[in-house]
Amino acid sequence: MEEKDQQEKNQQEYEKICYLCRRPESKAGPMIVMPGNMCLCHDCMQKTFDSVMGGNVDLSKVDLSQLANMPYMNMNFAMPPADAEEDGPVISRRQQVKKRKKKTGPDFELKDIPAPHVIKRRLDEYVVGQERAKKVMSVAVYNHYKRVYAEDMRLLGETQDAEDVRIEKSNILMIGPTGSGKTYLVKTLARLLDVPLAIADATSLTEAGYIGDDIESVVSKLLAAADNDVARAEHGIIFIDEIDKIAKKKETSTRDVSGESVQQELLKLLEGSSVEVPVGSNQKNALSPMTTVNTDNILFICGGAFPDLENIIKERLSRASTMGFGAQLKDQYDRDNNILSHVTNEDLRAFGMIPEFLGRLPVIVTLQSLTEEMLVRILKEPKNAILKQYKKLLEMDEVKLVFEEEALAWIAGEALKRGTGARALRAILEEYMLDIMYEIPKDSNIGSVVITRPYLEKSGGPLIQMRG
Image 1 (tube, one colour):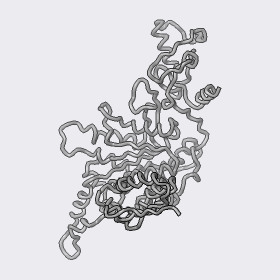
Image 2 (cartoon, rainbow, N blue to C red):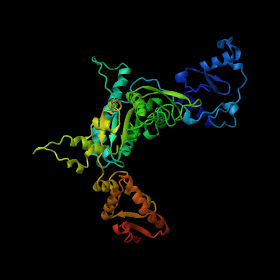
Image 3 (tube, rainbow, N blue to C red):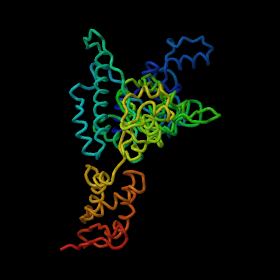
Image 4 (spheres, rainbow, N blue to C red):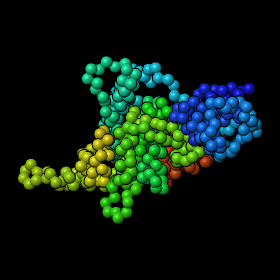
């Protein structure tokens, strides 16, 4: 009985999909439900009768209810149930497309969009430092969703703007060294705004027709993150990481299918267009249902470390040096830890990004390199700090975990030497916490453990205090 109720609920919530052409009813029109609960669109039904009967049969005069119950044909969608002849073919849940609700108003109200200072305050709870980046991101996201609201109101005909001002989309380009928090910042932002997020790696993208992921695969990931709800996906965020890896190759005698060509292919998505994407798969094939997603209101954030970009910036700034008392020293920028903040489109073009691509990413956010002081704060201050996670794990064994300040300073200094940013912190802690996590559960009398600097330097051990 419960299974039957679930099937009825799925029929109300999800679209019917043609068994042959794999199009949902929003694209193919109303479906003909055949015996065995098999759905066919009018086009496929007509083509089938035309091919079998030579086109001399009027489909409207055929009584479909008189057809014998059609047997289940396994087309590799999913394994058929035991009573397949009664229930019909099974379509995998991840390939079912949610029905679009009839739009009677905007998807959200203007008051639902948090103000920039509210977004930044909530980001401060999770992300340490990067004040400028958080401020720019908060304003950009706030303006983007105001634009989405204005577009919804315009399409519904509820705006009375005599000048008909159209707000252009402002996508974001994030530049920062590895481990500075680009991906973490975007993940936190999407979670706070409660919008679907898709993270794609630009290194796997190639021009259409070559081995690798098509450009549209990034939209497929967003659709999957939105539980195949097209309307929700069209208000989501797509983060394309490692964007610096698709820069133009300096010297190449072959077709650059994973560099400049990918930048060219991404232009239509960044600008806003309707693309056909497979549901439940990253690759287009005959067995995957297709649906249309409009990228006009999707916020694209591209991020990359851009190695050697600092040298390009220094070279440009050094050209401004002159002789005399007001001259700038050529080596003054060698000691500037925040050199990326001076970046311009000229520097990015010299790196290998094409001007058309940069024109569609007007908001540039630069992240600072992490200092030892910032790394110590990252260890203990955020809501989801690494130390808090380890303390939670040992609390489950009723053991209190304490880190001395000198130990935290040593961990931050060691992470700085490894050069992988905040990611090095977890690697170091995993290495030194292994023996403690292994030995603690052996003795139920242990009440607390204090991690000391001598223990980390392998010249001593942790301080262990027994209960009572």
